[in-house]
Length: 568
Image (cartoon, rainbow, N blue to C red; front, top):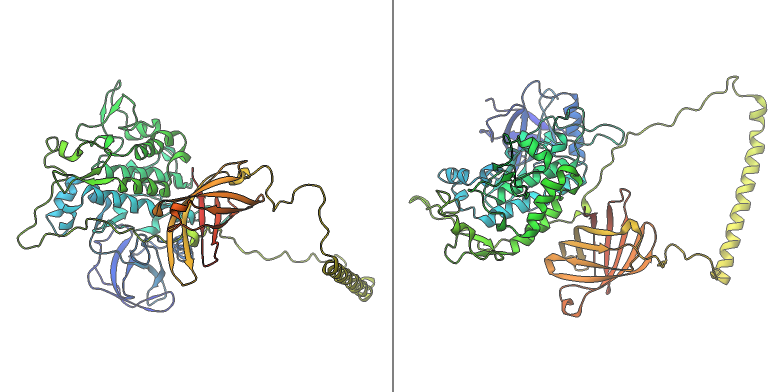
């Protein structure tokens, strides 16, 4: 394998490639670590792979990157940052952030047998991946999906081999150049040409993916499959024992009908080796039913990445340590440790602690997890690529310019200047009248749109909204947190919840129009120390499914802003 030499970025900076590649080489190219620029990797394409479409696609991706929710502490999306050019000024690859070398592929973390096998090699830390680490992995996977969708991208081939998991449960997407990329407002996107059989959403089965663009909802099907396998010891959701007539339907047929192992359909029952569905809170169970059963008939019912993040965050808060085996973790609503109960069912026990070798000290795993870095979603942009067009040239007169028309121009110009002068004089007189007498008061007629109407919250703002907001104080301190806001049509009150701070406040409508609301936010006295009253402004964005959120404290010393998205 020849080491690339003489490369530069599209900005002209030198690229120095390290001696050993990070990958053995796939069908498209080889990934190399870089000495310069530091902390970066190079995807070097094989000859014949690059064409004009790929070059245009990479250019759009570099120009419009999504938000990485783990930055600056870590990397969850290995996104192209700049093009790599060879000495003949030809495109040969792209530069991206380098993922930690201490990683495994997602399926290797989800499957207990893979964890055991790899823990006996240099991935020894994988043997200590408890259930709470798998929950955190699922949570970090979920939080990386919405920023991609909000920027117009679709993952497409949501393959577990293209998702890496580090020893700290951080999840990273690689091979991002295979994503579906928006091309322009009036153009079809750059399509994702690959797919994984068992992760293909039911609505895409038997569809020509080279012609039909994918929708974000198809990603949410694959996301639910990955989360299910992380929480259920690697078992696929559509596996199990068939109790119905005839042979067991194919995976795709089961997915089309919305029948999965825990759907409640008596025709398919879970394998006796699969963990019981009761190890999960009812809220998480309901999400899987939405994703696989309801989503089979209505893809929009599938939970979004942020919805999964909130549900898994709630699950994580319920986890307790087993009194009998301190390596076991389970939710406190379960009466007895389910992993202890399973010890006689599967051999070896998937949750068994792996003993350290004599040559290596035991790895110390933290007893608590720090909250992952969560920047504000207000930096996300819904990019609309538009092709600039020149105005049409003036249509020439068939007979050319006439003498009469050119002779009349000075006279027309003089009349136009007189009209402008009279108009400006009228504006000056009106301004003077307002200064001396004030604006006339309204004595009747309809209520202005900027004042609260008797109808309360307009229908366009009604519903549940969620998102991440960034709070800034006058001292320069910044803090990001998740926010949940609920409004009801016709009502002049709503609620605002900050789960991370356990604060719930009430909203009172003060001004309303079709596109903008102003509300007064107040918190109970027992929450005054952590949460602060203020004024909330909500402005509807063009798509109708997201709001610009702004908050200003009563004292004016701190403010926050972000983008809220409508919950499905």
